[in-house]
Length: 267
Image (tube, rainbow, N blue to C red; front, side, top):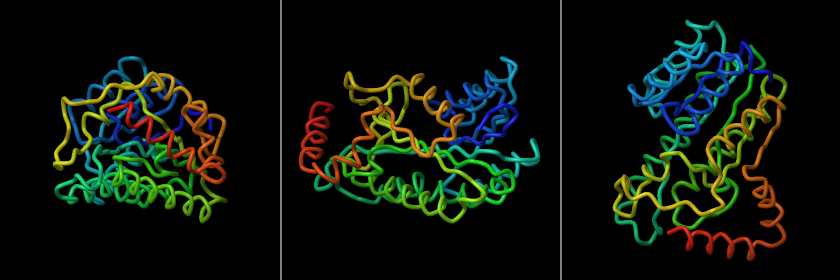
């Protein structure tokens, strides 16, 4: 897909990957509909795009509410008369061993944002995406295709979304395409700061340091944009994540040891 003159709806666009995707796609001539809960940050992103000659509109919304998702899409149609791509980027995480969690109630928050929020957005946008022969892009994770210590609720939400989008791809293969960006740890996002701890509270101000293998934000986004342009179905960032399906099938014990070690080094 050539981004020029295409309309992209991006969730979680007020910071991190979402904000950078909005800016980089805008530079390639795309029209950007930025959606997020934080109005001030959202407006800063859109203002930056417009001041640099781009086209963008901000929609304050909480994707865990279906009516908000409908409104995002309605605003996009009213402004640009079409939607060519939906980028599912909004998400929240966690960092706690399951047996140390005091109350698993926050799992509902994770599922509502990471899974149901994406389902709502796809349901609202799909008729318009089919009309434009458009694309769904999911900012996913290696945790969508394997287990991961300290992330049980997050892993469950991403597995669910992976299965959902695989089905959407199969049901609509004549009308839309789906790109899943399978990501590792990415520097420059707020995902860690906003992750739930064992006490069920956000760990703001207690972010863990990234390992040397963490991917810079700009490189991550550039790779996703290139993958959109090449119409890929899956992109692994970094590339070594593409080994996960093979290792799970033939060397699962080795893979689990490596992942467990990486988590231990990342405390």
